[in-house]
Image (cartoon, rainbow, N blue to C red; front, top):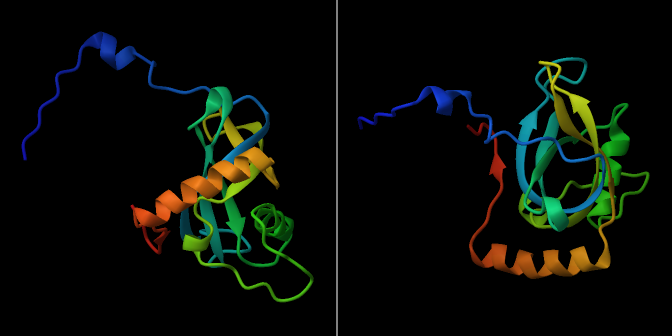
Length: 162
């Protein structure tokens, strides 16, 4: 395989492919992708979490993506896991909660509360600050889409993914 690319000065300076962060606010979305992974550092190193990609499902920003970690352990941020699972329709109570398989979560409608933070280069980026139940219209769209995903054999990624 021997590919060649010819860059111009203009193409190297162009920033047309970059996307500005979404404005802060609440958006209807679907759970688009989930990677099961472990926390890489800190007090919870080695504990399981979901790295979730949400697809904005309507409006001016339809098809844009935002991301969030969902811890699969109980610690200071356990509220995040509880609100995530409640928002997609699971009954979370003060007892043992069996985390559903990722395939059972993909395509679920969810409300995401998006805020603007900064990345390690001090550039603005989106952060998911919380989860809500989606609107009824978003639930209907997600239900229709989920039947299509299943028929196409959609799956979730687990373990080490590149």
